[in-house]
Amino acid sequence: MNQPVRYGVVGTGMMGLEHIRNLQALEGAEIVSICDSDTRSLEAAHALVGNRPATFCDHRDLIAHGGCDALVIATPNMTHLEVLLAAIEARLPVLVEKPLCTTVADCQRVMDAAHPDSLIWVGLEYRYMPPIAGLIEKVKSGTIGPVRMVAIREHRFPFLPKVDNWNRFNANTGGTLVEKCCHFFDLMHLITDARPTRVFASGGQDLNHLDEMYEGQRPDILDNAYVIVDFDSGARGMLDLCMFAEATRNQEEISVVGERGKVEAFIPEFVVRTGIRGKHSIGKVDESSAGNSDIRHQGYHHGASYVEHLRFREAVIEGLGPESGVAEGLLSVAVGVAAQLSIQEQRPVDLAEVVEVVEQQNGGGHRG
Image (cartoon, rainbow, N blue to C red):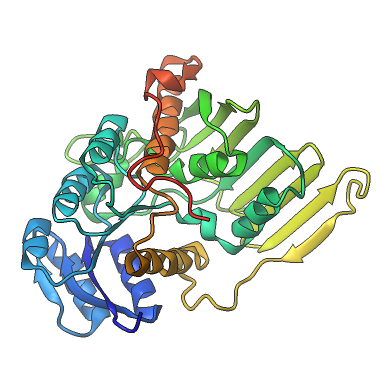
């Protein structure tokens, strides 16, 4: 426990730099290697790290160099598979940015390649945002009874610029409902503790990036959608996504209704509201703030990534399994893929059409 965990960071664009900031705030973490094929991204990482980590332009050279106890993968989505397979072969613990991969088939390749003791942690950090963590705790404690409905609304700003504008195209990202919304499908799965069975979605690209062109190609990513997900428990989930709605009070609002009551979380208000049937009424519910003074770096996700890094470091040191592993990563991608297909073909999509039964293997189960 007294020895620092030595990290290699593969991908030092916007999210790679954010991971570096979290690691710098984390006790017992040392960044010893960085890697990116983009010179400007590497220079930005060097300026941030301050010391002189080993520097590489190819992830295979970083892995071959050795000296790392764990990897953070923050490269563009479409490159995750190649980097993950190399890390698995080297038996390195990995925290990989969401989504696990851009397709279900590639996620399955990662699952098939993983060893029984592989530590592959998928960066589904929304579950660690203090208000959402508070909501999940209330649900899991039985406060509102068996879950029947989960509603998630994200009203936010458009996709940010990335290196070479890779995030403007479905082929690179997996599509908006994979790239952005795998977080929310993971939350639905976690909150309901049930398996998604059918997806029905409606969405489009109505406003964002319509006047942009890159090498003669116009961006094709969705900027708004409604997605309904049925679960094998009988519970239902709904996502309301709009990426031209930054003029709003809360970016995320999550509501979970059980047989006994309802719990809600609001971000960035950092408020959790709980109402119990027979005890509370409309407009009169319990309300509490949901901060965490122990979080040493707030970052882009209100401290969620810092908490995730704390848990990941613990897993590396103690030899524990991930809290969001390959199985969770695959399932969150599968729901996004089904939602994209539902919009494309204007029909409900059974999850069995896009993925076979995902066994909780390769460290993919939840940790208590």
